[in-house]
Image (cartoon, rainbow, N blue to C red; front, side, top):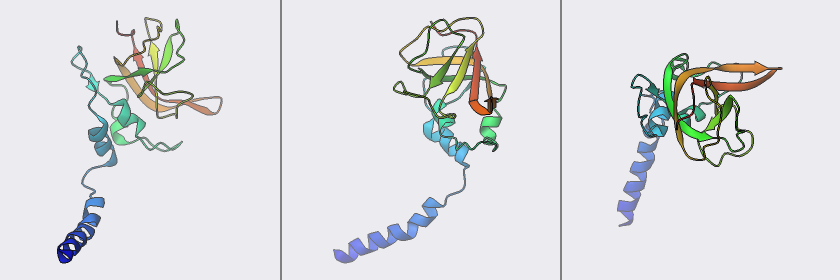
Length: 159
């Protein structure tokens, strides 16, 4: 029995480096596959489904290029789900879309999508919402500070 345990442990130790060093997929592809799977949008059809969790998982550093898969979404029509940030004021043109309903305080720059409503105004919705609109991904700077990384322009909130 002890010999059997030793063989199993030795086999695991020898196999571990090859599992840890698997570079067949990019980090972006792995993040998309690992964190994707929100609800599918109920209309449109031409929008690309994007996971806010995958966007949150991007390793962001100021001045560095975003991953290629994020850059490819810039200017495209996307569908993404999330929650309105707690503290969203009613009657405004914009709000932060966050991946979890319990996000409190100021989020990290890559942990939210800055949503602008082109026709409607904000009304706080406590549950998960799915939005479709034109997505932009780049550093937006105001007074020397990066204020947003991801932005979505959509006509109005879902009913």
